Image 1 (cartoon, rainbow, N blue to C red):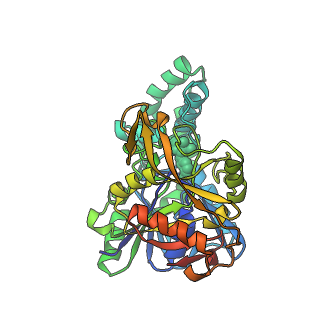
Image 2 (image 1 turned 90 degrees about the vertical axis):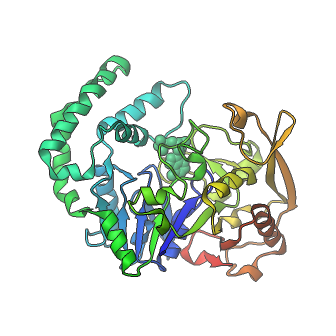
Image 3 (image 1 turned 180 degrees about the vertical axis):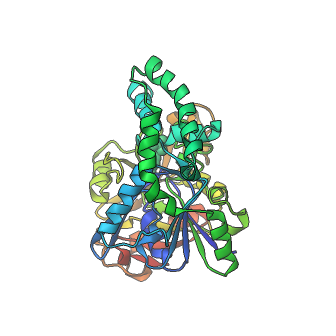
Length: 424
Ligand code: IMP
C-alpha cells in the first residue's frame, strides 16, 4: 500500500496545494482524481508564486510524474494555457512527466456556456466558478461526454460533438436565448489543439499500478473540500464530483487499497465561496479581519471568500466520511491578533443539539452554532518552525481541535511559503 491521499476538509481553499507541494518530495507520482480547473492552488516557493488549476501540484518538484486522472474534467484550452504559464516560470511540463488519462472527460465550450447561462438566469444561484464543471459531469453521467482519448479518433470526436449539440442547441435557442453553436467550428478548434494534447495521453491507471508494483509512492491530490462533495456536501450548493478520499481510487482507476494514508487539510477557520449554508459565517469586523489577514480571495475567480469560525460539526462529518490518519492545520497565523477565538462544537436546531449536519432540506440553513471561546494570541507566527515555538494559547487551540476530533495534527502551517510548514 503505497498511497497517500490529500483531501480538503471544509468547503475548499484549505491550502491543499501547499501541503501537497510539501509532501510531494516524499512521493514519486502525484495524481489528481476529481474536479477540474474550478480548483485553484497557490503555492509560493522561494517567493515565486505558482497558481495551479488542473495540473497536479507535484509539478513543482523535479522528477515527479504527474497524472490527471479519469475522474477529472479537463478544459483543453485552459490546460494548454496553464502549462504555457508554468513553462514560462521555468518548469518542465513536458509529456514525459505529465499525463492525462484517455478516460478524462473534456470540458467543451457548450459546457461553459450552459454553466454561465444557468447561473445568469437562476434566482437560486449556486455561485459556480463558471468553468463548465457541472455540465461536463452531467454529460459524463448521461454517457454523451467527450473523453480525452477521443482526440485520437477525429471521426468519433466529430460524431459525438454533432450529437451533443443536437440537444444543447435546443437549450441555447429555446431556453437561454443564445445563438446555436456550430459543431464544425467546435470540432475544428479542438483538432487545432489535438497535436499538442495527444502526446500527454496515457493509460493512467496502468502507469499508477506499475509505479506501485515497482515500490514507488503515489499521492492522490484532492481538490475542493468534503462539504462540496456531490453526495455528502451541502447539496445543491456543491460541486459535481465526489471529493471524499475514497473517490481517489475511482477517479484514478486503481483499487481502494491503494489510497493508503489519508491526510485531511483543515484551515484554522472556515471559508466558503459561492452560495449555500455556512453556519459559522461571520458578517462582522472579525469576518473582515479573517478575509484581509488570510488573503481570502479566490485563486480561480478572484471572488472574496465568506469567512467564519472553525466548525467541528463539519469536520466530524468529514472525519466519519474519510477516516483521516491525521490532519494538516493550515493558516494558523491568520488568527494572530484576535483577543478570543471561537470553535463551533455542535449545532442547535429546534431545541436539539446536533453533532453532525442535519439531513433535512433546510436544516443546515437554520442551525445555530454552539461555540466554545478560547483566549487568542498576539505573537507573530511567521517565524515559528516547531511546536515549541508556538505561543501557548495557539498550542491550546490546536490541542483542543485535536481533542474534539480525535485526530492528530501532523503538520502545522504558519505562512504561505514552503518553509513555513512544520511537522508535529
Ligand atoms: P463548480 O465546481 O464550478 O460547479 O462550483 C460549485 C460550487 O463549488 C461553488 O460554490 C464554487 O464556489 C465551489 N467550488 C468549486 N471549486 C472550488 C474550489 O476549488 N474551492 C472552493 N470552492 C470551490
